[in-house]
Image 1: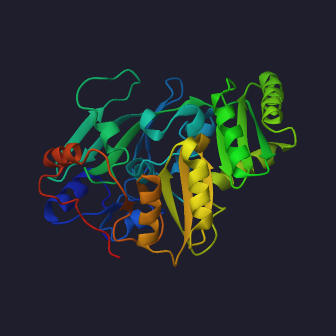
Image 2 (image 1 turned 60 degrees about the vertical axis):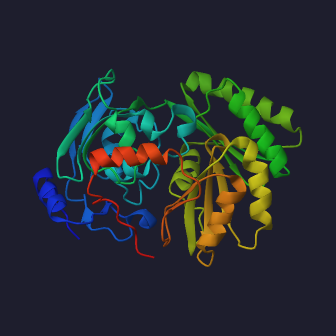
Length: 364
């Protein structure tokens, strides 16, 4: 596998290759299977302006390095990226378009990317966006490459805006009797004006939520949230966690430590109104799976056993009328189910990759 140390080496590799598949730290093996180029050799924070709440780093930079630099200045990734402890890189996270539980409060990774430098299928260096928050001129390349799975080019350098870290956090665990009651409570909480940091459902009926902010205000907000939970079900069991216990809950969630061994992780975008239907189908299906509904019920993280095949996942997509993205395991194509905007995507490819160098199917 090629591992260029700079953009010039990368350009030479792209021009000399017929087919290219890019990876970072290979923390999402279903997406990096068959990779021919690694960006791990292009690593480091190039610029960080705490007073401007922006940073620029090379694509191969581990997220943990950036997280630690931000934390020293009381700042954080607002999109709460997953796989940080596993070694995920900035470029790989951007290309896969992944965000964690904190997306519920702040938004996803696409909302915070400001600028990008990349190499196209013709080996050209392309710049898009900028290094300031107010930048709306020209073709919005940063938004286009986020979640593109490396299909439009090889990311080299990225600029993001960041947020101040809350002064304190509190987590509430609420155990409801069934998925219907738990999901109804989650939807009710999502509509409440409490600005929750995170809101997840661990089926059948366990709701996890996180409150962050000024210490003086979090206590009162926690009481109001408890009242909402009791209004949803007076018999709900509620536990409040803080400090290390609070941090561990969300670290386990974004690192997917709840996924059993020998299971394949898949992301399925859904709607909160589909959660009960999805849970009923998955509970009755002939393959054993483990689930977590995140971001207020807008993301289904689905862990399928290794013996579950592509037909099983395709059936999930068909039943829910939703696409899926496999992150681990081996698949003929990690993108499953219906896809939106194929005509627009094809037009983009004629601009960024006219020779189809990045159209490299993973090996099964």
